[in-house]
Image 1 (cartoon, rainbow, N blue to C red):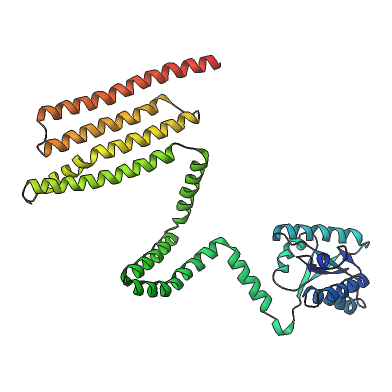
Image 2 (tube, helix red, strand yellow; image 1 turned 180 degrees about the vertical axis):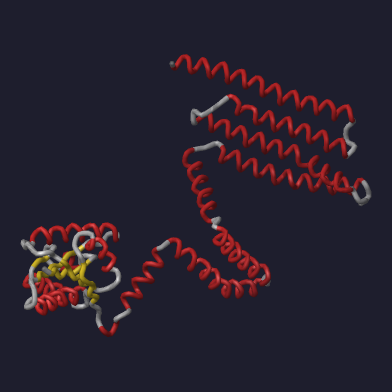
Length: 365
């Protein structure tokens, strides 16, 4: 037995007429087609139902045949496909025959054909009949393809963002010419396009999205590290500027003479190390605070600010010594103090973690 199945994925029949779906039987399908044509003569699903009736009349003399209309809904494609599948099950349950049932699917374009795998999972499909107006045979397929491309975030970002930047070049060039800065605006636009293409080519957009998502979650969950990282970044910038200024000052003190690579490095470190150490301590304290608030605190985490302080002190003393700002005795004292500070903090917090962690586990047990 052949089942001619007319598919109306977005349920135009149910929304525009009083017919309940699925509609089963030749006369009922014809009446539904007339009702839909009366309600909306331009609806392409009218042609689908009349084509179903036409196929029924043409095949009826040769073999047993039935015709039915199944519909989806206006929601997502997944929801509509599921509803079509349920209505197909209803149609199959209503047919009383001992013969094997196969189907011919009648649709009005590519969008409705997305439901073909759903129908094929329930009944063998002999063919798909697409019915469109002759004057616009490829129009709906082209429209559906463009719609799918624009709905896909990956494709939309790949095609539309570079196109949008390119279309902005001309108005930006006119604006730049008016304000007397053509090079800066064109260079900035070119840089944006180049960075976007580079990010897409290297696949960095996922990393950027991950960082943005993590930052947003940190902002909404009240994480202290969000503030301390911003402060640490500012301190790093200030430290970099301070290092460059120290280098210029040392050069001025030596009358512009060549300092050599060692003194250049020492000048940069000497000017920046205090700010860099402050940035490290700030960020580590923020991380420790968040770990404590999340009940994941461990005593060894407290080593971080002391390690930063030790390393900062040692680098400060070494760089100052190479710039002849401190004596050899001061350098030796700072190296010793930095080593002792790191070892002492490690030992103290290891003992604290061992003692308090064990007592806590003992109380729990």
